[in-house]
Image 1 (cartoon, rainbow, N blue to C red):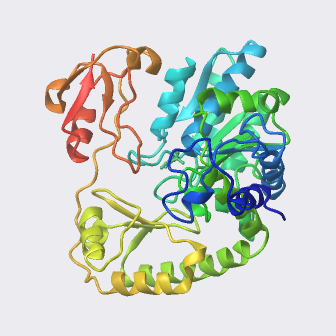
Image 2 (cartoon, helix red, strand yellow):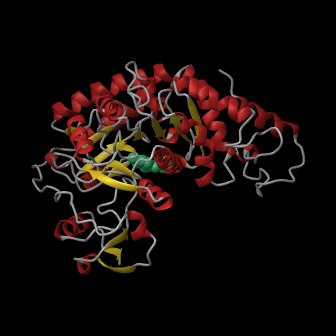
Image 3 (cartoon, rainbow, N blue to C red):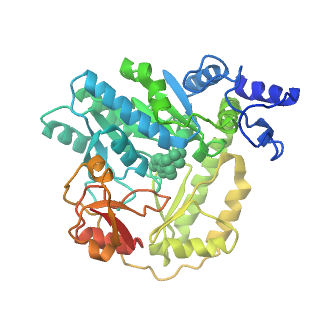
Length: 444
Ligand SMILES: Cc1ncc(COP(=O)(O)O)c(C=O)c1O
């Protein structure tokens, strides 16, 4: 596979022409910044692509088996806004309700997408108490939720995988969506690599119509690198309007460094990445077994994540994180209960050995038996958009009982809000704010 963006920019840099164009640094930050150009002649234009970007995106589409793959240099956050907009256009075309049935553990980018587009959300809740970060939606529960509606929604929206390595049953959910003739949208920000496993678990291969992947999370790509994928079975309108949807929400200054990394990533994905991934997942599966034997409780079935439920081992997630940090190991995410590591295939087995040594050196302590408060199921007062388009007042979380929530500090990761904008602050929400250390929130 070729890498046309990379080839063009590297040739341009080598020619040493006078850069009378953006960006302003003119390459002064060394070798990498010398490749940081803008959409000059020959460099194509993101979302009006006809040249090297188009060719590179087609390479990516072939690798992921999509009908169309578009690059984002602004993460999955941009793709999520575009997906919701595409679902809205399609719903309008078909006279459907502008509402998505959405699993509650959405990333905040989904809330921003609702505010931008005016799409509404009807939340799907987990049947068990999964906490804030997870929300498993079974095909049966989705079927019941779809049947209970008087009108067909614009689509169904789920996050899979989540920060704790939990995967939704995308194959089952997509069958229910096909029966009901509604599109399935998947936030697969954490799962770009799923396509390259021995058993392909990528949402697109399991029946999703639209999905976004943050290449930068699990593939060797720079921060901001992401894909919007449209499946071969998706409604035609998704493909027709995709470039417009991305352009509408995107910056007009895409990062060529990030584009180059997506471009060169195609070559790696076709060549060495799958075997590196297989090797790392095999080692990680064996490590997970040894950790379980040692007494660690693990969450999620995701093969490239290691997520520990720390309390049964006698620590909070943050406490265990601090012990590892002292040994020079930084995890991706920790909260009072969980600690999540995201190793990469390019790190190889030694990185896992170092992690194992550190985890094994921590002695098991008496289990902490406190549980997180149940995730709130609050009263909806306003839509997300109505709430977010209102001026709000900042109050201490303790004083907020009964007020309408607008925004609160959503720490990232996991960026999953405790309440959605427009919901009434109730006792359960207050307990969650306290547990997760949210001291102030904005309310109406
Ligand atoms: C589940 C989920 N969706 C979407 C995003 C946004 O992705 P990005 O940072 O690539 O914009 C994140 C980021 O952490 C995420 O965890």
